[in-house]
Length: 141
Image (cartoon, rainbow, N blue to C red; front, side):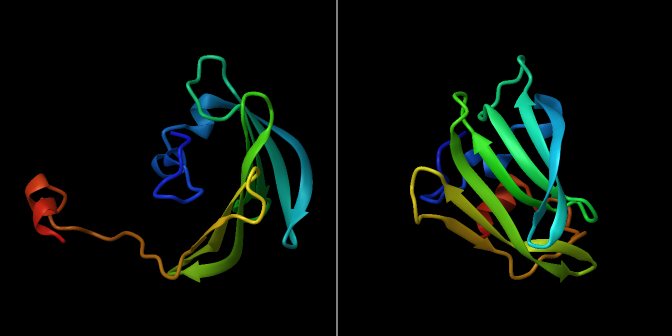
């Protein structure tokens, strides 16, 4: 799950979210810091002993007002930083404000990063019954 997806710095776990931060980690507020002018809670997540997870530790900065995840650091079992995620450029998509740019920065590759820019986003979309059937998926190209 920690392997890069299609040559990017995104991991399969980033996309599939097999790990549950709520069920697999023990959270602890370890401070407050400011990121891009927004006051944030700094939260340390340590895995539960019973959890089958990729990361040995995660530190997340969550904005106090709108609860945006503005920064995350992912550490291995030996407590070495593996990568960071940095979210920025908060925009309104329909009726929701969300970060529109996410940078994934590997710690062991200086100067490298993957940047994801969200140009548009739609919510509460309805699909006709059977849209996700195997037969229909074969027809869509």
